[in-house]
Length: 70
Image 1 (cartoon, rainbow, N blue to C red):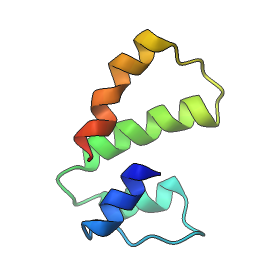
Image 2: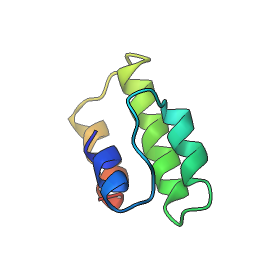
Image 3: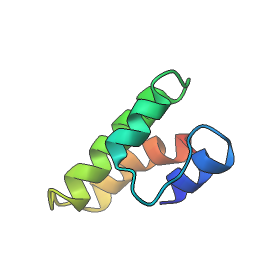
C-alpha cells in the first residue's frame, strides 16, 4: 500500500478504492518506473493472493524492488 500511496502522491497514478493492480499497471505503462512496478506487483500478488511463502532470504531478495519505487 505504501507504494500505491507514493505513486499517487507523485502523480504517477490516480488512486481509487475500486481499482485493481492491473488498472494501476495500465496507468503506469508509459511511466519510467513501469518495469519496477510490474515486478513488485507480480511479487506482491504471488505472496498475498497466491499464498507463496516468503522467508527472510526471499524478503531480502525482493525488498529492493519495492524500495526502488519509493
